[in-house]
Image 1 (spheres, helix red, strand yellow):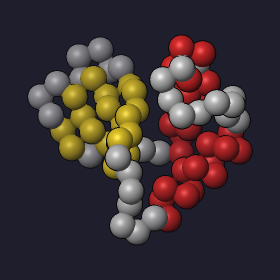
Image 2 (cartoon, rainbow, N blue to C red):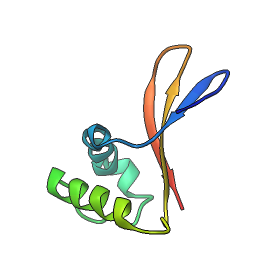
Image 3 (cartoon, rainbow, N blue to C red):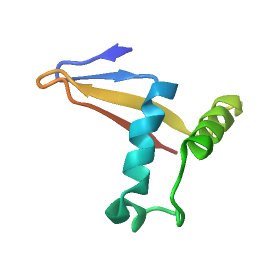
Length: 78
């Protein structure tokens, strides 16, 4: 974990997949992603396992937690 003044960055965990699925299946969010179908937990777990097998990784994945109100959200980028 990387601790900052306002937020902490942490590795993306399998427990994050539930909220990621919810966000990725949101109608407004899907308009701005490459995903055209609704995702399920099987899709999410396959994706999570795939990105953890890549060496070197193509994606940098992390969770962000706001220290002030303890809000948790996850992010990834390539």
